[in-house]
Length: 122
Image 1 (tube, rainbow, N blue to C red):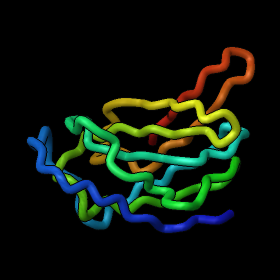
Image 2: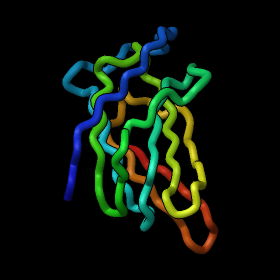
Image 3: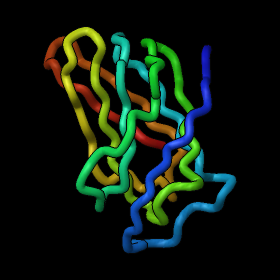
Image 4: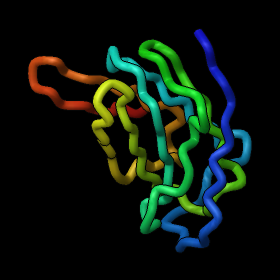
């Protein structure tokens, strides 16, 4: 399984809701269990007004693969939003208010019967 390392540079200052994670804990692993390739992924502080840059850069996150994101140089907050864009049809899906101080992994799923994308954290 390919596990590239990417840095998410979020350069805005935000109010701290709770104490940020320790530097060693500031890596998030996103696992693509959707069955589809993800062309773009954005991780932004929940208080931000935009999505910043694509953390996949020019790469993609294939079905079954994982992507590690180091956000230790990012905004000093625990609360983050995640957005993905599917390569097949350009559909955008996002989830709000993940507490990165308490989780280190997000698994993304797609249900073919309902057409719904979900994210589970742990």
